[in-house]
Amino acid sequence: MTERLLQYIWQFQHFNAKDLRTTDGEALQVIHPGIYNTNQGPDFTDAKIKSGRTVWAGSIELHINTSDWKNHKHSSDSNYRNVILHVVWEDDVDLLLPFPTLILQDKVSKILLSRYEELMNTGSFIPCEKNIQQVNDITWAAWKERLLVERLQSKTRYIFDLLQKNNNHWEETLWWLLAKNFGIRINSVAFEAIARSIPIAVLAKHKNQIHQAEALLFGQAGLLDKEFEEDYPRLLQREYRFLSKKYNLQKIKTKPAFLRMRPSSFPTVRLAQLAMLVHDNLHLFSKIKEATRPGSVKELLSVTANDYWHYHYVFDETSAFKKKKPGGQMISNILINTVVPILFAYGIHQNEGRYKDKALKWLEETTAEQNAITRGFSSLSLPNKTAFDSQAFIQLKNEYCDKRRCLDCAIGNKLLRS
Image (cartoon, rainbow, N blue to C red):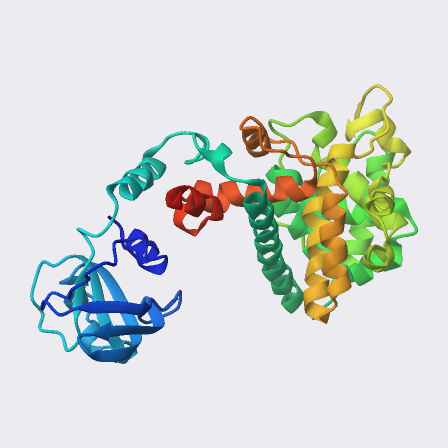
């Protein structure tokens, strides 16, 4: 037994409520179990019970053992002065509390406890995968929508934190997020640091000259700190020396990594693409707000690095001709993980529902992500058709399944109650 499971049992009254009696032998009736409290204080508030002939209204506290009340020092905590009932799994000590105590150990179904134990101890992809087909489509649809909103709200909090750091500059915030996304997982932190080290106002002044935009990005990344043989990287060096002094720029401390990645994902290629995105679309956030479909945003993101990179993956090493353009999967990833969240966050910030609705609609119109998590759910015959589905599955796996939060999950609840 865990305290969270005990809270779940009480919240949904999953116990035999017939002939309830307190530890003093007095008849007890639960008129209302109360509202589950996730903040400081008792586990349930606004409850109502009838003990003997008296009706009480107030809070209810739950513990595994009666002695936990004393161990947690609740008697000296003013938050617990309104407690009307102490619900425990096991009565291990007589505390002489001024309110009744109810023991639940012999009132709960052994089947429910067995199902919960199985969920907690399984080593499968998700705890409930053996029984997940029992859950109907209506339950899934409602839960996936809530999961998606949870995920977007979490990203919104991060975006609001960025806005506080740049004086509510939405274009700059998008620039930071885009850079982080272009860095993919390995270089995301380094790329975001690069973006933060170059004010967007500085980029605006030099966006029309692609070699100056590249000089700023490569220089701040510390990728121009060597002797070069080719003319182009030498040009970038000269431009960067001048611009870094002019704007008093400070390079990031850690250079982007090249190890264990395909050449098309090298930080040099990604920075060159990012420079071209700045060159073509500095006021990108304004264009995103005005866009009516995700396809038009993908077109804005579908940039090609300048001609030098047609024959290079790194400086001073030529390669076969290939235009360095982000692949469709990467562009969709940017749309899903950067564009949609900032559009959703903007809708919340401005109290404009149309932007939130558009963000959700774009996920429904975008092909689902394919990764280990989504493939795992697909193997269980759960449809993964759009980004709406894949983002919900990612949230479910990371925040509920992996953390064994089955009691907080609509699917887990459904299976436990069935």
